[in-house]
Length: 206
Image (spheres, rainbow, N blue to C red):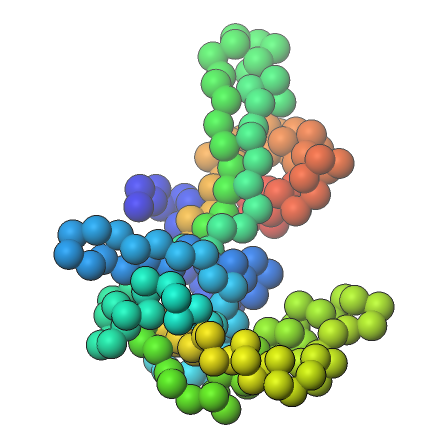
């Protein structure tokens, strides 16, 4: 990806925090010159491997299932906050009008090796952890034990665990770092109500 230095983010803690806050990933592998792309919620294990491990599951009916008879290279993208930025928010709009719109966004790109794991215990562990994480804010969190055992067994037969060992990871945090301090603060103020997360990102990484 095009990555100007002032938008480059290599701090692992920042990147891992971003992944955990935005776990739905675009997972891509290449097969016979074509890109097979899927959108999969993944959990991050910061301590596994040299640079971390991503885990999730896919349906056995998914074409990716057959492509993973052998380990493959994968490209994974996590999309975080994003927002349209109006030139009306820049100081120069009132002075010389030599300003144009842009788009702010944060993404994390991961390269790694993807494989499927045919192990029901391993799969159940992934599902249980994902469920606990994403049900945590519910008044009464749902858990796998709430469903009948035979139903869960039937559903487990239809899916398989996957893991992606991270080989490289980099972020592009394009959040008005190339603007003046006044312009960046104006952008943050303009976004406070409509996009509080991006407003915070502009202030944090400026």
